[in-house]
Length: 123
Image 1: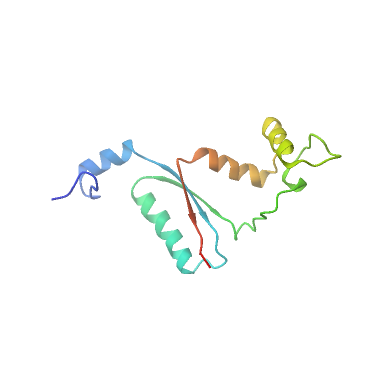
Image 2: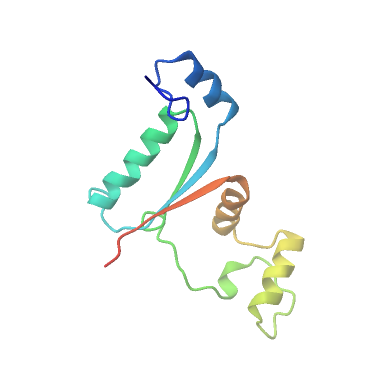
């Protein structure tokens, strides 16, 4: 007997329930080799979640050459160009849409998602 908690894709109950419980999932992948075990887990998560009817968006930090150092280059406008204070500039950028486009895209993904999955190795 199949439990309602884990319905199969063949059951009508599954498709009705999946439509009601669609989750917006953001998967962040951080590994230099897409063909690695972590890459396989990343792709499996995408495939599985989409097959289950969830809305999935992804960020591949290595592919986008993400720079984790936050400084003046993150902003298109500055509240105080003479003295850099990270927190003040972030608040100002939020008010005036002053983040660089590549960061704004990622911020929008964060605001969009219901669930965030981080896929990376523990070396």
